[in-house]
Amino acid sequence: MRKRKQSVKLLDYCQERASDQIVPQPAILRSLGWNGMHLELHQQPTFATDEHQHTMHVLACGLIDSSNKNAPGVRSLGGKRSRERRNSGDIAIIPAGITHSCSWDVPAQFMVLAIEPTLLQQVGQDWVNPDQIELLPQFMSESDAFIQNIFSTLKQEAEIGGIGSYLLVDSLKTAVAVHLLRSYCATRPKLSSYSNGLSQVTLTLVKEYIHSHLHQDLRLQEMAAIAQISPYHFLRLFKQSVGTTPHQYILQCRLNQAKYLLQHSELSIIEVATQTGFCDQSHLTRYFKRMIGITPKQLLQLRCVSGRSQ
Figure (tube, rainbow, N blue to C red):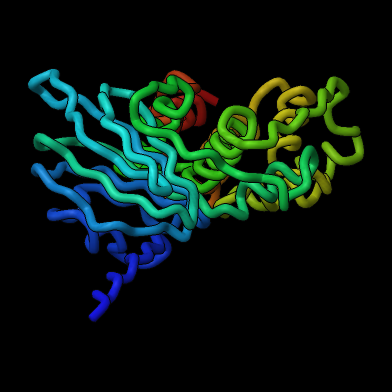
């Protein structure tokens, strides 16, 4: 009698605690609410996974623990097996739909970043037929400083979040998609070169949208839609036109508006923080002190002193 073949597990990181199916311990850090992208930080004992597939493209980044030793092991990608060195910063790429398994010879720390395949298609639509976008698998035996930095920044966002979190995550999402298209796809797109920035009419529309929605979470896709270009091109053209990224520009607008309201209204600091898109009073105070040089409370005290002297 023929033995029945065991079915391959299917992991969807859009579902809560999906990775619990294949690892001994739950992730010690997970992102929340990042549309189309999910980050996890793991601290695992020695283990081996069953064969499984992902519905999303998955990047894995090795980390060095306090003992300063790497955590070698074996990985199988699409039927090919390789022993990996897994130094800090080494990156594995597991495309969606590919059969995958891995084992770790020692306890290990690593991060996982899952990305919707449609993101690569959306970002790459200006350069290559979406049907030709094929992400290539890679074993965790080579480092990638760019992706390592993306992991580090996203880890900080997952830990503390804060003002403009969604916009920053959207920007990093676009950046990692472009990097994957450039460096890890079977068909490498020829990226267009732009040098003139956004048109004055388009820039005015985008700025008006930003100023009228400072109290909300502004999304990169929404601003790119106003300009009628892809998020990647919007990031490049906006910076060429304004001199800063959308995230930096919006932060400065929020601080300017907060400063105006503190000087010319009777709103409390908490109310000002809410009306200008800051998470709370502490977030406003932190950025206000860093970029303006004094705290909101100190500005109000100066306003009172000035009022009494008149």
